[in-house]
Structure formats: C-alpha cells, structure tokens
Image (tube, rainbow, N blue to C red; front, side, top):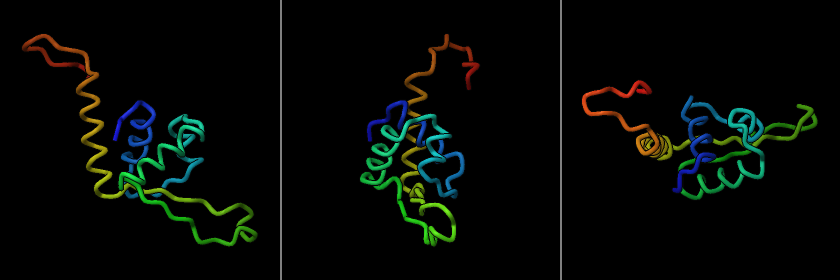
Length: 105
C-alpha cells in the first residue's frame, strides 16, 4: 500500500478509534478530503484487506435517509496502518543533532 498524505489522513481517522465504524460523509468531514479522493482510497484499502465495508440494515423511508455504507479497519489493517504511519513519520521527521531529542516526539 502506497501511503500518500490523503491515505495517511484516512488511516489516522480510522486509528483514532479502531472499534468505530465510519461512513463516507463522516470520513470526508474528519479528513477534509472530497469524495472523489476518499472513495478510491477506501476501495484500495479494501482490496489490500485493511478495511471491510458493510451496508447498514435500515429502512430508508423510516429513517428518512439512504442506508450508509460503514467502513472498519481489519486487525491486519490496524497493525499495517500503524506501522505505515510510523514509517512515514520517521521519513518526514526533521533530523536531530546527535544527543538531542526531537521536540516533536
């Protein structure tokens, strides 16, 4: 999985609470990504086995809205996402002088 900034935003949103199901509009608001960017990322995460998706079981007429498709990180996706974000952070963190601690950590 190639971790771009938009992918990192989506993974961070999922990792904020790995037990929470997320739906598209919620993820768009959290990440600031438009639907044309978000949904292809979700599709790639599903194909990689990092995310599962299920339609909610509601009566749209009774609820007054269409059914939502909920996404959730798989255990593999949570672990892989944490590792990928840590690697991305390590690659982009400012270099420190020997013996000094990076204040961003």
